[in-house]
Amino acid sequence: MKKKILVEGMSCGHCVNHVSEALKEIGATEVEVSLERKLATAELAEDVTDEAIKVAIEDAGYDVVGIEKA
Image (tube, rainbow, N blue to C red):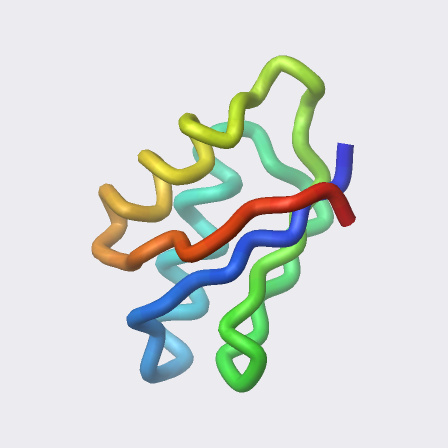
């Protein structure tokens, strides 16, 4: 299932890479992260919860503001 994740705290290309890698670690594919829009989109398995997404990104040092189906 494709998800859109609004992420606060990204300020550079390294931040984009960190968020992308955090999502890939929980099995995400087709990951795209936009620094300008503060938005990540990713294809995730049905069994990956929003809480798991939030924890992965927050563990990487960023704040998740919202998650919705894309």
